[in-house]
Each structure stands twice: as C-alpha cells, then as structure tokens.
Image 1 (cartoon, helix red, strand yellow):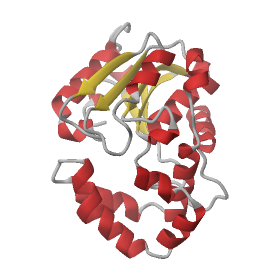
Image 2 (tube, rainbow, N blue to C red):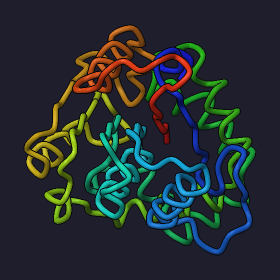
Image 3 (spheres, one colour):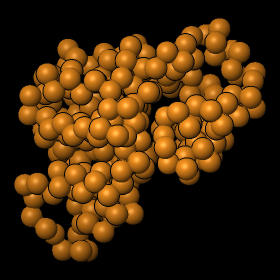
Image 4 (cartoon, rainbow, N blue to C red):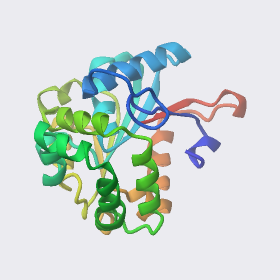
Length: 239
C-alpha cells in the first residue's frame, strides 16, 4: 500500500472479526464480507474501483465483482482459493465445529504453533512469524474459524463467467495454504484473466519477491487508464 499510495488513493479494509473491525457478530461468512465491501464503498462514496485481495480477500474480491459488477473496475487476487476444497488440510479441519472448539480453548498454544512452526513453512520472510502473531492477536478465533468454514464451502466456478472486467491472478508455485494450481479454474472461468506465477514463492509473494510483485501489480492497475493529477488519485481497495 505504501508503494501504490504514490499513484493511487488506497484503502485497507479489515473484515469483521479481523484487525481493527468489530468482533461481535453472529456470522463471519464470505458473503457477509462481500456485503461489507459494498457497504464500505457506499459509505465512503467510492463509485467504482479496482479491488486487490490476498487469500480469502481475493475470493471476496471476485465475489464482489460478481455481486456488484458496477462497483469493480478491475480485480486482483493473490493466492486465493477459487474452490474452498483447495485449502490446506489443517485449515479445512479448523473449519469443523469440534476442532474449532478445541482450538478456541487453546489459543495460547495455537498462536505459538502458528508463530514458531507453521509460519516458517508458509513464508520465507524472516519478519513473517512476528507479523503472523500480531495479526492473530487482533483476530478472534471464532471469527477466524467460522470464516474458514464458510470459505471451505465456497465454489466460485459456476459464477466466474459473470466477471467481465480485467482480472489478474497472482499465485506462488510453493503455496502450502492454498493449492498453487488454483489459477487454473480462475483462468478457465475468466478467459480474459492474466495469470502471474512466482516459481520460488509461496502464499505471500508480496513478501518473498516484493519488487517483482509490486511491478507486476502496478503494471496491471495502470493499464488502460490516463495518469490523473496527484490531488485526484484513482481509488484502489485492498482486502
């Protein structure tokens, strides 16, 4: 965002239950987050903008482009599941009620495991364990697990053909959180989609290969637009 902020007016949206957003809700389903994006844009007076989403954020971004096509000018997904069954086995297990109950009562050990083991497996950036722990500290386990349960049941393939705007899928070939071949159903469902693959990156190519990542992302966002005055930057929403 600090890089793109030089060229775009950028907004970062925390889903309900995550980051700085409210955490007292009955549901944390993917469709709830799709509605949240629509409300967010309506409240801020953002008529139309590119959406950039990582992991579940990308799945939500595609869903917004389907549900609110007039709101989305472009869509970018990074390591995002098109089909929920592509999630790593541990994540899928976490979305079941019994497993959720166990983890809900073992938050300390769970965070320690995520910080000291699982984080090292999914991202090579040395800063990542602390980033993972900080993010978990701002997330209720209930919202995390319920959202994962909803994501696991999601399948966007029947609806992808409704997306007519430019689309970009960025995937790391070493992704261990989402199956690295999820770019295939995206490309099949959205023929105009561009696909960028990072041979040596996993689920977080923006951390593992930041220079190439930001260059490819900006190139896509800059296509087919005129450069505006600095005081009237186009908008861009990151999920």
